[in-house]
Image (cartoon, rainbow, N blue to C red; front, side, top):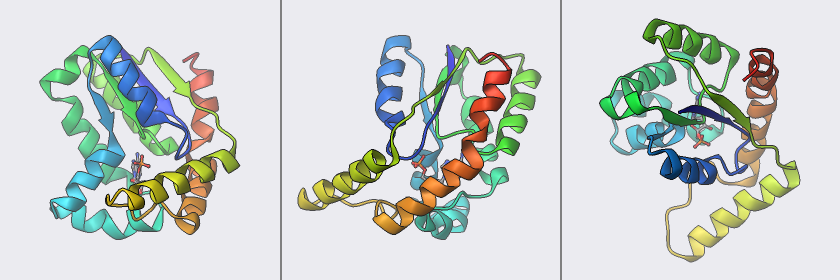
Length: 170
Ligand code: AMP
């Protein structure tokens, strides 16, 4: 089973991905998690993307693509995968299509999670407050100003993918 989850920040892609992967026994591939791990480990990619991620903007397509290609080539992804947070731009979507063709693979489903923007903002700010109160590490992009940038990036760069995949009957 190969699934792409589309949806703005706070829509619940991570939550739904966890439920789907446990049902189908496939890995959960979150580009946000991959990039955060790279930032934490201070790898070459991590050092390049840290500031952009903290600003709420999208990191360059080539860096994300490299990470996805590497992850999809691993043995557990041969069973399928749930992609969470990728593709996020038209150019990532077309490059991903090329990769799938090269590998002889097809997507089964693309699922869009649709949530009202006020609810998204409220959820993210609540997540940040509760994490802080619990003594946890709050994501540097979980605040009002950066959330506005993330929502804008979604509306401008990612939302068009809904029609793109709809036109492919996915
Ligand atoms: P997420 O955890 O999916 O909300 O992603 C957190 C941040 O990682 C985003 O705001 C972007 O800066 C970066 N990011 C994650 N996935 C992508 C992607 N497919 N393309 C570009 N940037 C991404």
